[in-house]
Image 1 (cartoon, rainbow, N blue to C red):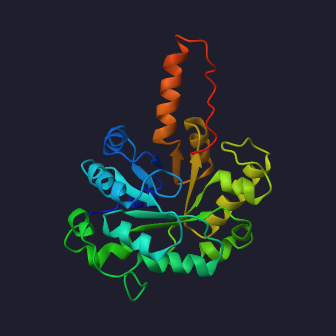
Image 2 (image 1 turned 45 degrees about the vertical axis):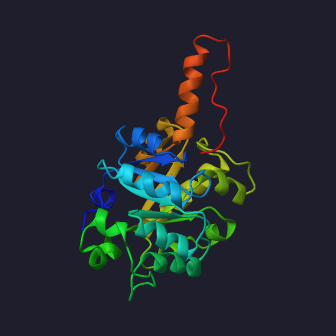
Length: 263
């Protein structure tokens, strides 16, 4: 089976730089895949991407050595299994709040006896190789998102769940969980920043990977220095917006300050 490059990178202590795809287009996916990202995540939760878009985007990414991941829209076994069958090499699952939900997520990603994933990888065999069925349980990455009030009270039980490879922080929903407004790249000393450090400490204690979404490369570098294993920077939509605004601002008198407050 094709080796999961970013899983190996994390095991070797190398940070993974992850890109984010919200636009349902093979063209934008292809452009992003040629920019040097270690992995690209297709956002099927808040992005505009559904399965019919995601499949050709995965095929496009596969023309490079970038590792394809997906964030599903919920902890729903059918969607998880289907996007894995399409050749996705890792799942980021939102709103995992307790051990039971973590177990359901992991088991949907794994073939028996470790899970209940149904066998029929279709494109997984093409991308992964003929021995996909024998090795997928070990190669597929499983990231549980920590972003609810309940999850913050149950960090260790989620992170100690067998099969959970890592956690992923969505700062916007994490902010809501602690009674703050949705925001990214929060400064040291802020309530969000303190929670991020707490989650990271628990991940280190449980010896699993930690990932986080960032608005800027500068903040992502700061998170790497703290010990995060995977950092996401913005999204294709944000890159398009900020790039266009920067160019237009050179001609027109407009506010160059970034206005997007989301991924």
